[in-house]
Amino acid sequence: MVPETTSSRRLTKVLVKVTVERSFGAVQVVVPTEETVKDLIKEVLKIYAAEKRRPLLPETNPHRFELHYSCFSFESLNEDEKVINLGSRDFFLCLKRVDDNMIVNTVNVNTSCSEEVTKEATNSSSFPWIKFMDLLL
Image 1 (cartoon, rainbow, N blue to C red):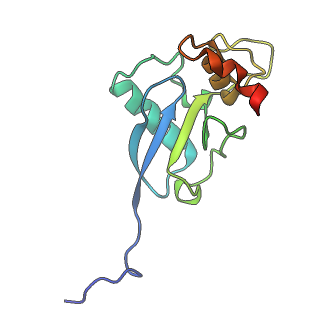
Image 2: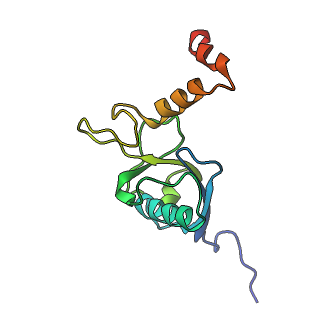
Image 3: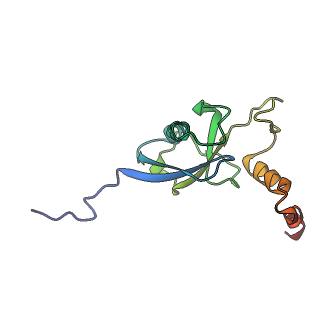
């Protein structure tokens, strides 16, 4: 019997953690390395619904969501990019903002996910000093 070497092993699946906008804790997904961002979004939404996580999502259509490296990242990931090529295993999922003047999820369409996080932090009564953080930077 020939022992396996590291060069003969091939990574077939990876554990990915995706934090869904406004939820607590990341959804953990084991996906094949050949899956795309689009497939990952579908899988995360399926697991989120199956685990009955809160808050309930206003949409379950995977085409209405975008994946980011973090909640502070402005650019969403390309839907056709393969998971293995992303260079990270932790992501942030949020609703896409529409281009017209409609309001999605009671959020102004011109705001991004990171602006929503900042707005939520400044509205928090537990940490009123966060409002002054922008002045310090």
